[in-house]
Length: 207
Image 1 (cartoon, rainbow, N blue to C red):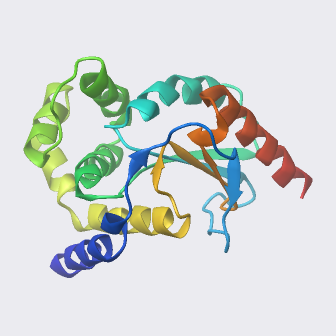
Image 2 (image 1 turned 120 degrees about the horizontal axis):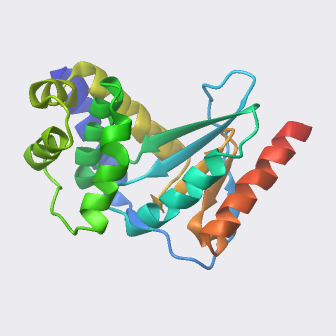
C-alpha cells in the first residue's frame, strides 16, 4: 500500500501538478481525438466516461444535464463516471467517491456532496471533513474511512490518474467517448456537449 501511494505521489509530482487543472471555459472545439485511443471496459457497448471534480462549479451545473441524458441513452451505450485526480486537492474527493462506490452508497453521497459544496458553500476539502460528511449523510464512518485509505482505492486512484493523463485532460467537466474522443465544455454550452456526445456515439455505432 505504501509503495502504491508513493507511486501515485510521484506520478502526480511528475505530471499532473505541472498542468493547470481548471474548470473549462467556453469557446473552443467541441471535441478532440485521443491518440492513441484508450482501452474501454464496456465490451461491445459504446463507453461514455465523465471526468469530474466535486469542487468544480461547471461540473455541478453539468450534473442535471447528465442525469437527463442518462434517461434517454440507448442500450448499446455504457456510462461510467470517474473522479478527476489532477492534483492533491482533487484527490481528496476522488478517494471519497471510490469509498462510497465500494460501499454501494453513491446515491447517498454523490449529489449531496455536490450540493453541500456549491448550494451550501461548505468547506469539505480535507480527508477528515469528507469522512465527517459521509457520516452526516448516513454512511458508516469507520467503514468509509477504511475504504478511503484502502489499497483498492489507491489502485483506482492510479487508474483514474492514468486515464486523465493519457486523454490529456487539463480541465473538467470532460467526457471521453469510447476511448477515442474528448468532449469538453469548450463546445460552447452544456447542451452542445450532450449533442456532441450523441453525435460521436452515432459515429461509433456506424463504425
